[in-house]
Length: 406
Image (cartoon, rainbow, N blue to C red; front, side, top):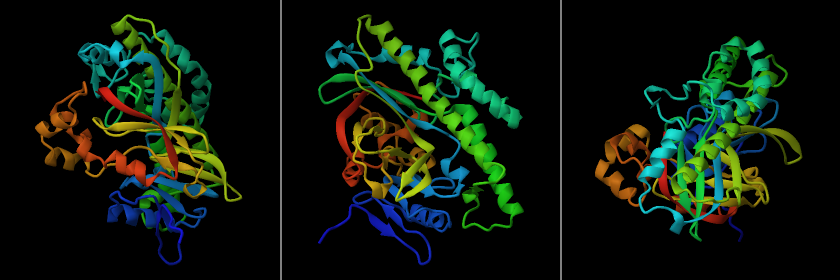
């Protein structure tokens, strides 16, 4: 008898949910949220839930939602194009200094991060650095076109946030792989401008649902039907924000590599292997004989041979993976370990001493403000990887030695 790698959730008269969650926690609230999404009539085939699945706003984080003829802005969320970038260098562990404190300080100076940097709001550059101006150029025309239709996008920290990390679970890490090669890995998205775009279209979708008297199982599932006023504009705006997010990661990677050069003062190569992938985005794809819009909310594309990144929490392993092209998951995999505690719960349940122990050997902040990102707030990454063994294969296993948190 053949067994599947996923479990199926199903309620009469709606689309099923296929969940790659064997061996990992899968709470009832997340199940209910996924079943609510599955009630929508424009879902194509089924919804795929990844092993890092957990409750989100509107849509469940760790879900893959294929649709025909409509898109759900809150399912994509407001951190449009959020994702990962990793780059292998020619450096080895032996070439790193015994103490990484100075390197962390230089990275933190070169990459604006957190709520306040240098006494100013994050990303509030003085005179715009030339690399930022150059990186903005390919984005500028599309942004001007968006602002002509939606003037409120103009007054965002768009160019000022380019090359900045942000807050929450965004990070920069220096890691070692199984052969002790040094990697740089980072996690961020489209920052303030993406937030404004996402929020604006979520509001428009909700207003349209009210205007058309459409009743939904969750108001955050408000959708924009194809052929209506905002559909094309939304896809164009999200596509631009995804480009911004990818460019943002490239700028930060360049600055982090320069920080390494500043501190080590030895020549090295980068881009020996490089991955830059979204895990919070929209993509037009072809699945089961249909052209569909795939919304990956905390999920990574894992087409056959496609490279991706699955990070663990600070203090845990991360993985560079190769997609196996599993069509039942719409060629997707998890985007990380997935939370088992909310940020508030983690700060209540985890002590500072426990956090310090859990991050032993990692040069990082060890204060109460980052306890919500402590390893025990997340699912065990090894169990998450085991649950999706039919979605990806592991190419490299990384262990961080330095972590900069936003």
